[in-house]
Length: 74
Image (cartoon, rainbow, N blue to C red; front, side, top):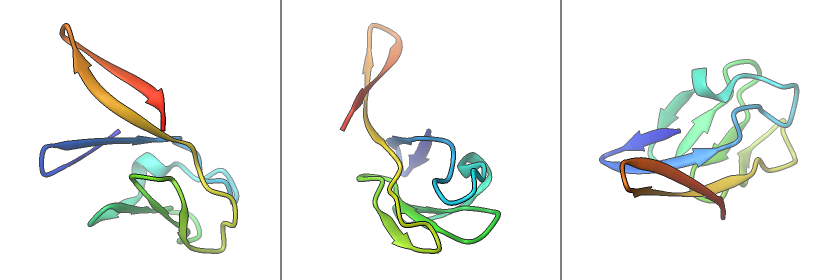
């Protein structure tokens, strides 16, 4: 999960290229860069913004309800 200016975003934590840990990636604007090979993913849609990955990651809608975070597939 990523917090960008108070907005919460959630995507799968594993890069679709070679399984890199996206939670350790560099975040800028609304994208995250895989620390292993530099693939970039959109935090809103999960789409690949830059390869080598070709397959998107799953993105989730995030909402706060009754003190809990609720994730649903986007």
